[in-house]
Amino acid sequence: MRAFLLRFIAVLLLVAPAHAFDTNAQTAWVYDVSTGTTLMEKNADDSIPPASMSKLMTVYMLFEALEEGRVQMDTRLPVSTKARQMKGSTMFLNEQDRPTVEELIKGIIVLSGNDACVVVAEGLSGTEDAFARQMTEKGKELGLTSSTFANASGWPDPRHRMSAHDLGLLAKHLVEDFPELYKNFALTEFPFDNRAPANRYNRNPLLKLGIGADGLKTGHTQEAGFGLVGSAVQDDRRVIFVITGLQSETARAEEAERIVNWAFRQFTMQTLVPAGENVVEAPVWLGTENRVGLTTKNGVKVLVPAGAQDEVKVEAVYDSPIPAPISKGERLGNLVVTVPGAKDAITPLIAMQDVPEAGFAGRMKGAVMRLGNKAIEAVGL
Image (cartoon, rainbow, N blue to C red; front, side, top):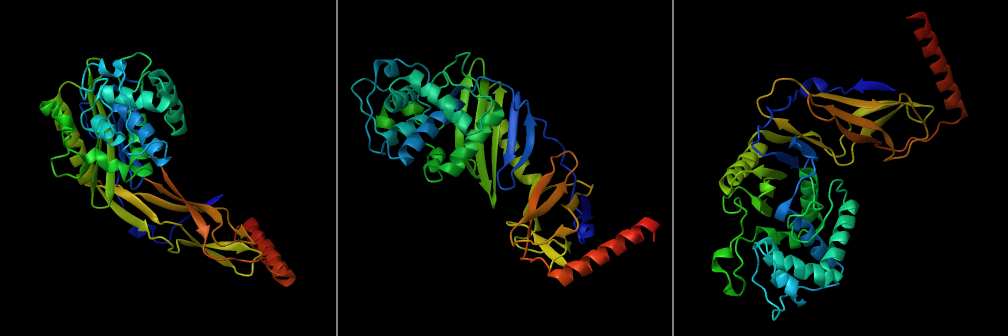
């Protein structure tokens, strides 16, 4: 396979990666959704106690039940003694309550209600143990490779583990799979029945800062420390991040704000190739046309770190010549963007038009020309 440099590579002088972000978190993962770029990771695949951040999976399961029509927003679920006896952060539910699904969603997201999680688990699956098994299976379906769930609330249990990467991927699924329901994560207050006025505020420290934050979930236990799965949108970019293992609420809030500012200020998004633009003309073998234009389906956008000096390498990689017949939209190669210190960004190159196979005369002419070129190459001319 030969790699043909793009004709305009000289003007695509991009930049090398920005200086790495030195986070105080024990584990961290920062991801740009718009370009699919991991901006930073630290022990991101380590198996850790996720605390209340794992409530995101409970919410995902409930959102899925809503989408499938198994429950509605006004469906009321019973409260068991087990739910009422849950410690930690709660909605202060009791056995006489019949909270609606809508109230439970807000109770989990805003109030971090451990009792609400048990109500949801028992309402959807009969028992919390059965629900936890279903959470683990759903995690596998979603691509979570380091996640096992022992309960619905994130209550400490040696069998209850996730990774920062898994938490971030789960957040991405919530954003993309349930765009309307996801808006609940931006709620800053939920005074459920005015039972606990001091506990009516969302613990997410970023929601009131005016930096585009719209989710997702905090977490804290003695073993896990203070953590946050967060997301923010500015202009056309969404960033999702996970931090865990901080020593205090203040440290968590400061680190989260630092990460958001770094992710949006240190990187800008640029369009390398607009959708449908002719990237390169590739030689064709035995076709009615001598060349075929190669393009990308959706264009190519990359994040450009600020203040860097090295250039990014951009190459079109394909077999040459490409044998006819060729169908419009057929994948014929890749556009490879290489940034030092980052994974190559690979985008399929597709044919811009059909190129039928040439007739007998055309094939004979092509064969003669091919043999002539090989002869020239053999003698070194």
